[in-house]
Image 1 (spheres, rainbow, N blue to C red):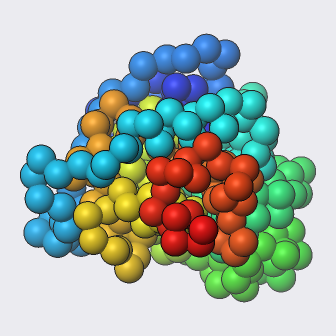
Image 2: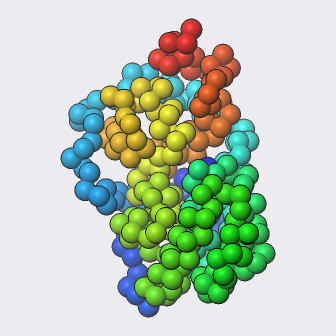
Amino acid sequence: MHTLRAGMLTRSRSRGGAPAGEKNPSPVKRPHKVRRLDMAYEEDPEGEKGDRVQAPGWEPQDWREQLANIRAMRSRRDAPVDQLGAEHCYDTGAPPEVQRYQVLLSLMLSSQTKDQVTAGAMQRLRAHGLTVDSILQTDEGTLGQLIYPVGFWRSKVKYIKQTSAILRQRYNGDIPASVAELVALPGVGPKMAHLAMAIAWGTVSGIAVDTHVHRIANRLRWTKEVTKSPEQTRAALESWLPRELWSEVNGLLVGFGQQTCLPVHPRCQACLNRRLCPAAQGRA
């Protein structure tokens, strides 16, 4: 799944959610050229800072060359995430708070779901009317029909309804502008929160790690020790990867994982990193 690439995000906003009842003015829009983002690191909302697996000063062997090779392999930007990620699923003509809401819903739908399926569900929702008020007025049966067949669609119907009610009550129909407040919403995890901060608010708050990033980071040994969850991988990557690269790594690795470094039967022979990848060497 993806999201808007770091270089294409909206203008920056400082951390911290808007007070209840106050409208966040910063718009979500898709610019046509690379723009710089503020780097505002959010602490782990669950207080896992002490669980970081890396020692200061450690970095993976050959990681710069590996990264350059992945960039070369991803230069065409033709993976599903590049065309159907969350940054492509919202209505650019809608008011800014509606755009941000649509970004958040697309991220909620994307969990355990292919980008093509998420994009289809978002298209149906937008045709139905995709605002906080319209979703609150939509019964669960109809909402389920609109988002099916996204993964775990029944649970997501409930999460969307609950989250929409909270956004109406506490945020005047907008979405919060901090990772801590975002992950407190039903059905919103850390990866979604970091991507929402980047796409909706233009702020890089951390590295968004999904199954693709988690898998590839471990195959390339970009973690000092094997990590068992995406959150452990996020902490490991953030401990050494220069912050100016945080905004790039999700989209880069997600597309790489969709096209080359597949979960099963990775295409190692077509990979420029085949001689630098420990996992590929193990398959040789």
